[in-house]
Length: 137
Image 1 (cartoon, rainbow, N blue to C red):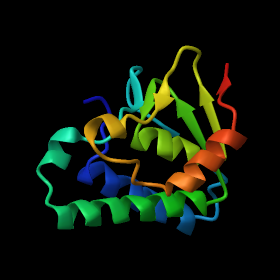
Image 2 (cartoon, rainbow, N blue to C red):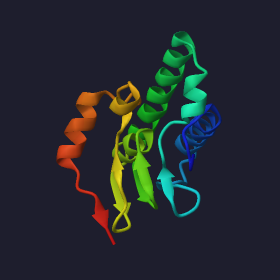
Image 3 (tube, one colour):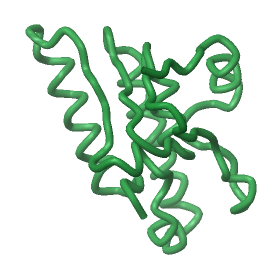
């Protein structure tokens, strides 16, 4: 899957956010995906299918902690360079500004797979969707 969220990049993003918070010279954080097809195409379904309820819960709580770290930074932008699905959409919503190329898609498809968005409380995600417009250049 293109730029799928998994344990490895959860750890990498968490470490990056710690470093950004500790460095007073950094004024803005810009998140973007590798390549042109996906910002973040959602969770790594193969990894999720291997998780037990206990470590699945731990994975979700850690993801929520990462979102909280992101939301409590100063200026943070998402440069949406492709699909922003599931957790990718949730990460983009945690940014103060989200910019997208025309014809890019964002959303969550978790209900089709039997789960609800887990990185951000659904209430705050709905509030942010209502308040934030995706900008295109």
